Image (cartoon, rainbow, N blue to C red; front, side, top):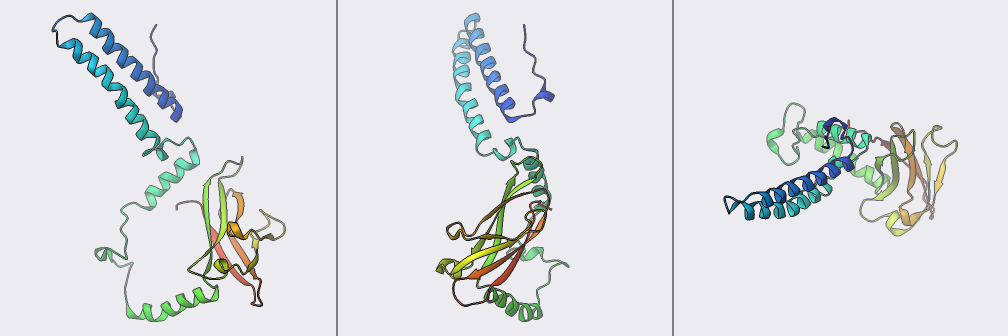
Length: 228
């Protein structure tokens, strides 16, 4: 009785690992069996034996690489696979335009006018929000019917209200598809994080209230978990 491996049925990482282990057993067994049957030439027996022994650490090394260096490609999540594909499209022929001056083209101009007019505005943005910004991280959702699990939180640029501990709470507004009323977070040790699951991109507003007498500020972030 022979075991037939059908490649088109191998669709999960655990199945691929099982095939690798089966292949290791078959190859080692074949080499050792041949070593017991072959008598001539005399050098063939030790060669087959050494090869069989060498296959074991080789396969272990390859499996280790699959589970570490190539682990993203081994994920069994269709959303993660789609994200990887989109990442490849977005970063195709990537060149850092602030470092490689040779990539400057018609879509990228450096002029004194832009620097003089926009840099003060950029600095003012830091000052207006006290260096506080909204950031988010996401992963493929583990909630049925959703695409992404998202963590939204505050991040301080340099020193400021977060590091000084003078933020009282953060009032999040994500829209009626998430909450019917604003969500208030006062978990300062977790950077006022809010955890949600979503099936599409959305705009998040955060109203930050302070412990001192200063007025609240409103910051925003477009929460997008698609690499397009």
